[in-house]
Image 1 (cartoon, rainbow, N blue to C red):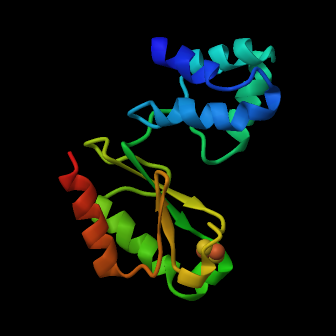
Image 2: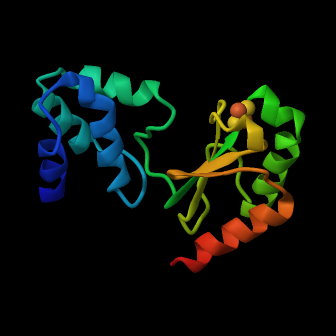
Length: 153
Ligand code: FES
């Protein structure tokens, strides 16, 4: 795919850029994941073994090797967010989306995941949807955010 090549060539051929490259490759995929072709192309571009690139992609939870929803919801699961109710927000999200953690809605719109601290504990409880952070979450706020995302279609 031509845009894959463009992304690769926008970075120096330096293995230090592997995370940034994988991130960009994943972002351009409407299903938010890295295909075997992405992994292979990245490995070739950086002169690394495919198994190494695959290893990096499976180590970081922000990457997926399986198709996900258009919006990947990553709810913070670290203690400061727990203390202010992230557990009940998780139950709420699961009920609302009718999926469990790690699953994708039938319409392929949302995937629900957990993550460790997003670095915004001051506005806990927090979650990220794709690259955007949302804090001070409440049930009402979640309803509004999901509606907004659905309306973006
Ligand atoms: S613990 Fe949730 S953002 Fe830090």
